[in-house]
Amino acid sequence: METIKVNTSQHVDIDYPIGGLGERIAARMIDFGVLTGVGLLFLLFSGLTPKSTEKTFFIGLIIIYAVVHVFYHLICEIFFKGQSPGKKLMKIKVVSLDGGQASIGQSFIRWLFRLVDFWLTGQIGGLLCVALSERNQRIGDLVAGTTVIKTVGRTTIDQIAFAPVQEEYIPVFSNVHQLNDHDMELIHEVLETYYKTAHYELVYAMSDQIKARLAVSLPVGMHELAFLNTVVKDYSHVTSVAQ
Image (tube, rainbow, N blue to C red; front, side):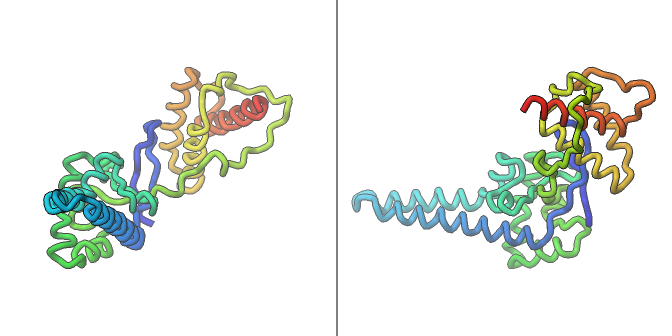
């Protein structure tokens, strides 16, 4: 499965799968439903206006709806971090090919090329390009340097099966309480990625971040992988005692 590295808030690169054609079509249909619903609401409001102002009000609503319809995807991608309601429901989002959030310029180019991807080609151009391109990019993505990734698959704290820790266990890093569940989720994901791919650079990067957060250095004889596993064990003990 094609993936792209996304830089997390801890400045660690995690591989995310590229969004598929099916998710993108479903997201587009949901967004079409949202816009249709907004249009129906506008029609409803237009029927509630006094006769004396009905024509002017109706024209105003048409103009407002036209603006919303035209700029809908651009506004969503800029202000909602690459996600329209449809993309959010389908758990996909637009990102730059370098893994960062798409810039305003990139979002504008993607939006501009909707004309080519969908309107001038009867929806076919964009769909074919997504289906055939290596990173499932439509024409606008290719020009803007963006793609769509899946946001699912991230580990949550509830999904982490902490190994049982004996009550008399003494944490190696006593200030591990400075970390939080999100840190544990990210550490677990880095460890899972390492065990699948042997990508030790991720372990180094995550280890450096956690050491900086805890203001500690590696004990003599402890390597980075053991350090992360120890932090998880310490956190499990500290949080279980606190409960």
